[in-house]
Length: 102
Image (tube, rainbow, N blue to C red; front, side, top):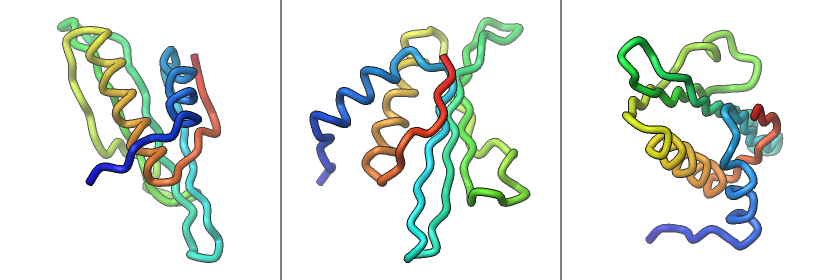
């Protein structure tokens, strides 16, 4: 069963809607957990397609700059929807936004 977002998390998603790049962190030293997750909306490419790039890994790890996932969409609305879904997933997994670029 899907975990429902709290009202506070819904408000946070609404505030992040216009962001172009968001870096999330999930830090729990007792579990040796130091994770990051970056979601970035890229402008249209040569063919007019928009991209959503996702990078994740351990904070400070060398391979952190390699994209893990690339979502290609045709419209800005699809790009915003895809980013909102990814942000909701991060909130459900205990991540909090630390850097937001408009």
